[in-house]
Structure formats: C-alpha cells, structure tokens
Image 1 (cartoon, rainbow over the protein chains, first blue to last red):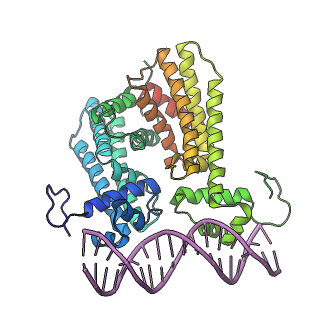
Image 2 (image 1 turned 120 degrees about the horizontal axis):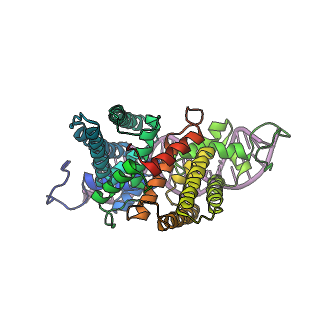
Length: 204
Length: 204
DNA sequence: GTCTATACTAAGATAGAC
DNA sequence: GTCTATCTTAGTATAGAC
C-alpha cells in the first residue's frame, strides 16, 4: 500500500496506485454522480478489471471519502489563512473578505475535481452527511466573517446578510461549472474579476 | 391517459396521474441523480409497485424529458419577455438586463424542482445532451443581450464579458441550492437583492 | 498489481390478471 | 390504476491463482 501522494519516481512493478484510482473515480463521480458510478466503470477507465480496484481500496465509499477530505481540508486552510488577519478598521475587514474570496477561488481551481464533488453532494449517506456537516461549519465561519465586516460598516449587505453571503459564494462556487485550466483566464485574473464584481458591481 | 396538468377535480378511480409520477420522479432525480434513481424508488415514494409507473410513462427517460421540457420552456419564455423590450439608450439596456435577471429568478423559484434538474445535467445520454444544447442556445442569447448592453456603454463588464456573464448567472442559478418557498424572502425581494448586488456591488 | 470465476442483490422492463 | 410474477442485465464484493 504505497500511500505516497506524489511519488516522484515510482518503485516496483508499473500499474496504478491509490492516487490514480481516486483520480479516475472522482472524474466519474462528477460526470455520473457517486451512486450511478459503478466500480466496473472506474476499472474500465483505468483499463483493469473490477477486482483490481479492491486491491487499492476496501470499498467504493472509501474513494469518495478520500476526495471529500481533500476538498474540505483545502477549503478550511483557505479560511484559516483569511482568519489570521485580525482586522480592525472597516477597510481591513474588506481586505479580509477579499483575501477569503481569492483564496476560495484558488482552492476551487487547484482542487477542481474534488471541490466539484463536494459542492454537488446531496447527503444521501452517513459519509456524505458528515462531509456536508463539515462544509456547513465552514459556511458558518464565513458568515461570521461577513457579519463582522458588515458590523464594522463600509459594506452594503442590504439587510439580509445571510442571503447576500449565499449569493456571493454561490457566484464563486459556480466557477466549477465552467472553469477549465488552460483557458485564457488564470486564477489571479479570475480572482480579480470576482472581487471587482462583488465589491463594485457592474454599473459604471 | 388523463393528460390534464391540473385537473380541478379528478374523474374516475383515485390514485396517481402522470403529473404525480413526474413530480415524485423529479424530486428523487434531484436528490440522487437521474441515473441513480430507480423506478422502484419512484414507485415506493408513491406507495405503488414498479409496474404501476409503466402505466403512466413508457420509460424512466420519459419522466426526465417531461421535467426538462418544462424547465426549458419557462426559461425561454423569460428570455423572450426581456427581448421584447428593444432598448435604445444605455439606461434602457440596463433595464432590459434587470428584466431578464428578475424573470430568471422568478422562473427558478416557480419551477424549482425542474429547474434544479436542468441545472445539474451532465449530458450523459442523447436526451440530456439535447437539453443541454437547448440550454446553450439560451445562454448564447443571454450573452448577446449582455454584449449589446456593454456595447451601448454604461456597463463595466471588465474586459471579459463572457466570464462576467457566467459569474453573474452562476450567482443567479445558485439560488436553487438554498432557496425554499415559505422562507422570509419572497421572489420580489430576492430579485431586488440580486439586481442590487450585480449592478451596485457591496461596497458603500 | 492484476486476473478469472463466482455469490448475491437489484436494476429496467414486460405479461397478463383484477 | 394497480397488482404479482418473471426475464434479462448489471451492480458490489470476495476467493484464490499468477
């Protein structure tokens, strides 16, 4: 069981390792949904038989868990990095939100497959509900940060802070629906664009 | 085959009609995904046996088609109503976009189940790809309307009109992820909020 | 690390009775 | 409008050889 995440030069017999299997699984989970993806489909994509998959993981659910952990950890790191700022003035609160928005955009792009999986979860199993709970904790921490910025003034959160926060992060999360690496738009530029729309709007 | 959509008082033997079956199916498609939803699950939700479903529709796919047609027709109507405005001045272009945004929000709320189904499509079958094609035509028409507004001036579409449009409608579409009827926020207020964020941004 | 073979379960759909 | 019974295919997972 070579648990190495990115071994630079693999030892031993060629073939697939755990990371390969997870990557193939996540791609298929995103295309067909977790429930509708069979172990046979994952095996087929890797060019091996079904039972070869069970050499790497104990169950189909373990593949889901791997990917969700990865996405959640990355998002939580983004939040922590913004929380480190400890803002005092209204302008510093705005800067903190900007940091959070850019860090979230970066995570969505860097972890596009696993983040996509997370954002499409429906909570149909215990594992999925646990992941959604963890995501809800993240959302609440974000909401607290936004509320603090609104309290400090300088932010037109338009009476309903909760709905506004959902809309803003709905916009950010929608990136996974269309963003593909290698396009003309890089992470930095996309972050600029999102921040500009959120804070300044589209009217001249 | 009583094809009535909302018969005020049903004739004949009590039980489920086509609309009941479609509604149950859509709810389950949204929760588990189309592929992962079995006809047996639909039957169970309605309290009947599997084969009772096949009295109302010829296949599982027909249930999907019904719902997607409904969502697409509603969205296309919203677009047509905005297109009827034929704007001349920059301010009229802005008003046209506002009309489109409000009409889209209304459709998402009024047709929440079927709109949710449409927005989560992955294009894994011919039917799904046909629906996605129809949705793409809608998106392109929206993009043309936005481009016309940008050309008329008065709109800070920040160099990349395409990405900006995607982000804005990503925000609007994200409504389906959390909006539930009966909350404190009505369609009108939500439309106000979206329009305010999109045009004015959050900074004071 | 991968294979074939197999156990067991559930899927979509049909036939024909009530 | 719904039922039971059935056909056929495909799902998750395991056993044990190479």
